[in-house]
Image 1: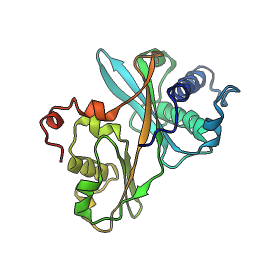
Image 2: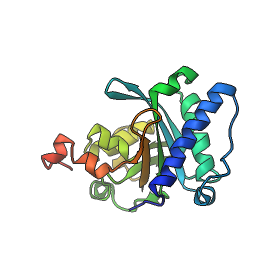
Image 3: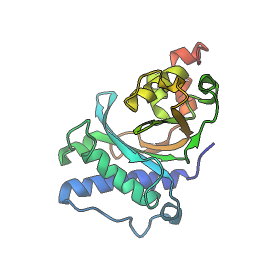
Image 4: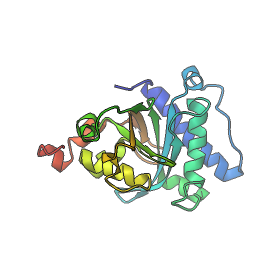
Length: 221
């Protein structure tokens, strides 16, 4: 199980992501990691994604999600720059404005190194685990990544997860059955605000998955 950081270190990253976005939207300034940054966050070079979600009643709507699958300088810098990209460079959304920062929650995902699955395509169904793995699909110039929380939130089966990862790479949904397609798995440690500027907690995807009706019924293939 990939859990390199304490809750305190994870909370630091989420606060850093929020601070980076708020300062940039306020002044246009890109901040540096502060002097009190935990040393490990300046030494490690894991992949990092920042997800920003808009709070709408009791629902959360994606507002931006961008990151570095295999790291950028170190975890602190990757958090800063992934947060800025998520707020202003996600091509699916217009750039955020300062008046939005009080109605969004931040999540930071720290990624383990990617691991190529060296098995036959049909064996992916038993080697990819929803609630544990994220996926990267690569074929030629095409590439797509889905974080491990996505299939949990969508209550997908393993096959659906593989298909949607192919679609994310702009490939056919069944491209994972083609020997020319490379499938990589990774794990992630997830830290998230419960509310805008609220308590920060570490997500437990297995627990979240247990609340999905189709998994409670035992249909988890």
